[in-house]
Length: 404
Image 1 (spheres, one colour):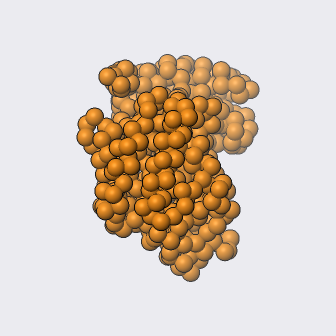
Image 2: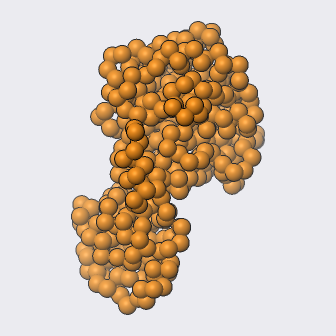
């Protein structure tokens, strides 16, 4: 089972229609409104940001899942405007968009799941969105090109689409899983730091999907970081149309589905890091020898979010002392005298002190677009993988000019 990424032909699960159009939110004139429709409805599972500042569509989406027993008929996503910190007017605008789409589809408002991404604190141009719904509906299709248009329309500072798909056996039937994501900045693991949509044609209940999604997020989107900022609009939504007939009735079927879901989520997570704002180096960070998974993740987050570590990586500087220092302030009860640090095949730190290494060789290794960093804590047997990146002057330029 191998997930196909954005540059491969996408596999589209049965029971879904996709479309996108230009509503006029983005000054560039690029597509900025996307639709995923499930004519027969879908069971849903979702995870959201833990930021205390929450966008209107997150509040509305949670409410709709509760009101409609986690069943979804359509997903509508706008980019270019986060509809966050917009007060009661933002909630009214979000509901107005859902109501207009529901009326056009002939379904209940609570069956529409909304999402927004873009600039915070700007009123949502609701009239533009509602006016664009007929064009959105007219463009619906069930093919890979339509799914790609959906993926492109939800982008903000992304430079490329993030998609992955896989076809796998689920019990006695064949099923398909398609993942679409957006995210390049404001990326830090707090349940789900981005917008991610996962579409599958398996037949499952929300109660079956939720724990599988939670576990997949834990080992993918909760293991990435670009800049340490947690968004206000983070959403990961898993939808199951049931059109393939494959059921999660047995332990084997659940394991097969979980394997596909984890593969897609890890692929999308890596794509998000690789497209991080201003990124020149993607870092595969592995923490070994921790007491447990939580401790390993705690150390990984501290290293991955250290500006000093990240800027050293930007310069391909083998400054292992910054990695050790970040592990030390992570809050984990590490013993520095037991820590080993490796950059790829090169060991730079042994038992908390410098190990002999050839700096030109390590510099050359760190100059690669993708490299590995491994930290052994010497406390136990648990390990965790984490994906992160460097911090460059280009990241500062992008975010300094984001609104202007």
